[in-house]
Image (tube, rainbow, N blue to C red; front, side, top):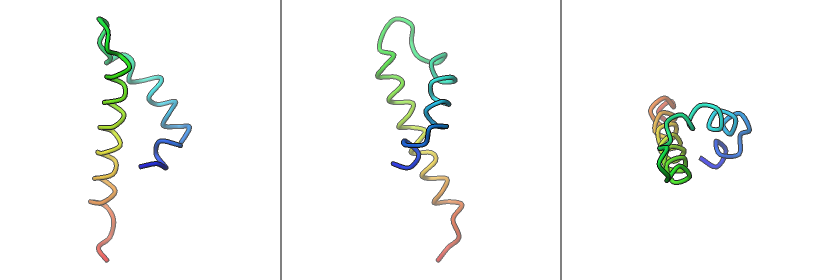
Length: 54
């Protein structure tokens, strides 16, 4: 998860795509943090599901 957060391509993705989903009436920073955490959780679960069994 830390690797995903340090990736500059991920930062560009969040800066360009996700602001359109943030609420206009306030709370945009909290919404962006929540979206980022949800994305990290989904990616983490997908990596677990797609990794070969050991």
